[in-house]
Image 1 (tube, rainbow over the protein chains, first blue to last red):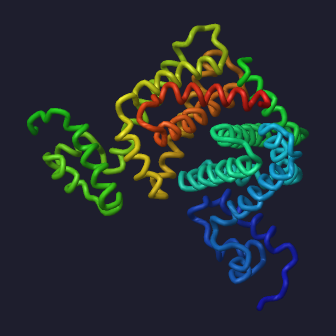
Image 2 (cartoon, helix red, strand yellow):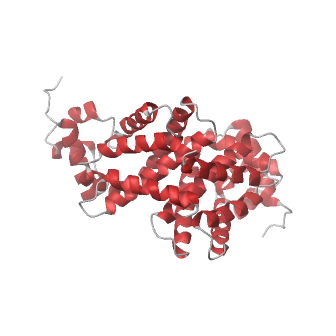
Image 3 (cartoon, chains in turn red, yellow):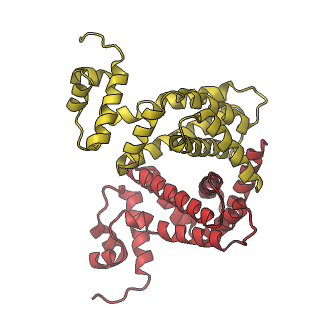
Length: 188
Length: 188
């Protein structure tokens, strides 16, 4: 067993994203990531299954957080209001992570395989949300449609946040996207 | 040059789906597809680049049709109404193709690589629709949100159609999904 390394997980993720940005994702090895972080390969593999997991390791937590917030919304909340509670919950997580999110986004959009992976994760999130809404008594197709709406709003708000000047926070931009979405659906 | 083969494209697609259903997509070869259709491999490759294109060859036409209908919607139509015109246009194409669509759907959902490909095609459709809406003067993020709404409604309506008893038509189910979607967005 290796010694405990303070912030090893974060250091490895930052080192990986630096290298993916400098050399490309394909050209970067786990050994190089560990070296850049000042850690061993063994430590890398204690935190991530492979170099792709550095980019997608947070997707499961994000899904859990979204689902928990939708489940915890008040019993009389409309489906779109329960989804809004989930959007607020996941937006908060990114408050101080924009540099990381931007670097990650740049790596993913440059690689077809990673883009596919990102789409799969979003589709999985939508499926999980639809199931959660059905668990709240929302019938189909409303459950699937509200879930798709939530994922679409998050994606659009998130991309605007990545592109926005430094003083906009994700929560505000996602809320704006939801408001805009509801206006579009109403025929605005 | 081979002789002209009546309905060769359709015969190849039907033979391919039969074989994918019987043996699995991975286990089926182009030679077997051609043989089942009573045609040559050379004829197969005049119509499809590979065995995957049999499943996705229609995606480009579908996107063109959707985009043309959105472009052609009346100038004062709201974004969601222009998207509705596109949904009607693409729904019509499938009127007499449910058996094919069901077989295709079963093959795709059984194969992770094909599912990813389907998600990529839907993401590409959404991007094309957003661009078309911007061309109609719709600002962002409304254009992207209306495009995402259109793709979500189509997907949900399409899956309900695949699962529905024989007398429901796709146009009606997609319209219902759009109505439901608008009700969900309004907080219903």
